[in-house]
Length: 220
Image 1 (cartoon, one colour):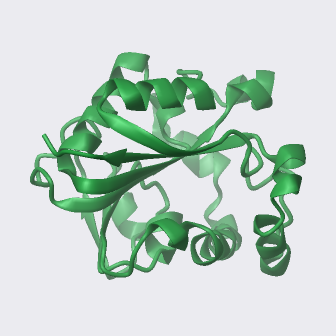
Image 2 (cartoon, helix red, strand yellow; image 1 turned 30 degrees about the horizontal axis):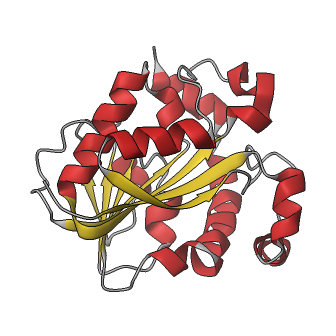
């Protein structure tokens, strides 16, 4: 599958500034609660680097097989073009936070989801956290399959089970958090995005993505 051509059509570069403005608010208003400024953070499946460019951390790493990622990563982001199931550049127990957004549904099967979690567990220190933002097929429904490269359906419940199977302790599970895409009903203006993030009852009306956190109690 020619993913580069597919993604160029789906995510025009002209829209990146608007998406970055949204992610800047999400990082500074919500995700910063789970990431310390002293942390080493790895963004798996970094794509256009909206998260890793905007999160405040001591060391920032983008992992993605697509070599184009280097074009979008900020100067303070290290890019690693390696598989999510074998990030050989990173040593065991060497990072504090692993982040994944809208990534796992692109993996061909659930075994690769488990293998990805196993690798995340390997590189995380004891007490480290995996943060997952993931379309929740329970609430997205048939729209989940509107994207040709979606393969593996996941819900908040299956995410929790998969994390537990791979040695994580789940500490946070929000079944409905953000809308499905930035083209959904989430307000686009940064001030309205900030307001949305401060009003959780609206999440239950518009949210179609789950947010799940797992912690590592012992490194392996």
